[in-house]
Image (cartoon, rainbow, N blue to C red; front, side, top):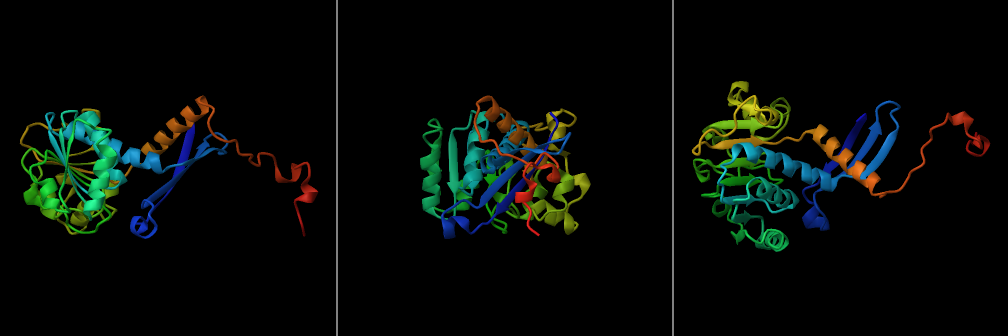
Length: 282
């Protein structure tokens, strides 16, 4: 398809507490390539959350144990909720979910919203105790807006898979003890402020320490998990072309379902407008 696009996204961590709205909002603008004219303006928050979770789930498909039974979360927001749904698709063996958040109320809300969708999973509140959510989990997920080493290396058992979503969420020893580190795009990670980005900037991590980018596992150019004892680490920074692919799929489905409103654009030359005299004041 001859489509290009942009996503306008903002992340305001104070939103939930101060305004009772989520911290992320997004919009898509899609254009066709031949003329450059826009073909769609779309709400993008749902697609953004879906994209992050989908990439994390694809990573889990290649890096988590096939018999993964338990998953632990630090963070109980929209990204965490979407991640659990995605992880359950690729690892239907998951039967236990432990969640830690900034408050017990957030943990209870997480469970209230997801337990009807996943009735075969046992949900456990930890009363804000991150350690209790992580220790012994087969899959660990941090989905926070924090800039602090919340996840400790000693909490990650052999054979565990860690999906890192946010910024600086784990202590350096987590990555240092992992057998494989995979990114969605390592080159982009080096220019950001995530944990791996900080380690790279401080000379504690090099290109040689990165096992692969995710597409190399998907294409089988490099192996994913090779033993049940490997600790594996996935860092997601965000891939814009995946956002646009999702937006285009949503746009195509909306067209097929005759959903949406048509917006009139100025396609003719300005001075060819049939009533130009009424539009200009000097």
